[in-house]
Image (tube, rainbow, N blue to C red):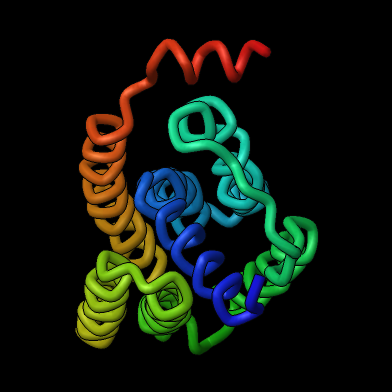
Length: 198
């Protein structure tokens, strides 16, 4: 096939895969898990747990809920492998921990809002999905709102924890709506069950 045509098919396939809302739901759950760390430094292990869920759980759940409904096509892999994503996230987490313990910890809400907002924007750009643009805006606004709160003397740890919990609620809600629509549009048929079994 024409490489340009293959590239276009690949873009559409990757974009379609983002329509299940699974990654957004799990990102919300990960945010909820990360939040308590900002209230208590001893809960640093929650960062690893939240990160691990976000990196590995979407693919596991897609094998159960998504691929039996829409099938699975493997393209030549260009995106980062899960372990590379995990290492990148751990580096990000270590920076967050250093910032949390630093005199500039009042910048934490803005920092997290900017980083996660940019990540959502890049995902939207790469996968051509509008919902990520919306989420990028919400996340960036949460960072600015958090900065206003810390500048008015509210404890940065408390602000950041509530910022993440609020974002978690928004992400889980948006992802759940996407997932419900996806499941409705792609019911599991007898043919799908037979293919999965055989």
